[in-house]
Image (tube, rainbow, N blue to C red):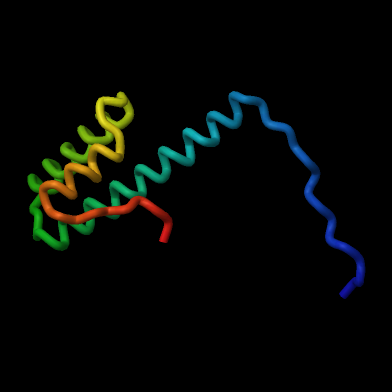
Length: 94
């Protein structure tokens, strides 16, 4: 073992376009992962067949489109959920 300090990685400057692309890729990945987990969970919990899974995914994609087009925001979804079910879902990191 050497007693020297670890070398820091060289600093890199990213263009605005590169940063936007990285953010978009990270967001797309998060949506894909969340959708897959949600679909698998719904399929297992409600014993959905192929048609049920397709219908569920279509509804999720429609809601994602509403969000991306700023038709609704996450606050609208949480308020609707609370009104219809009594569940007060706080979107925070656990």
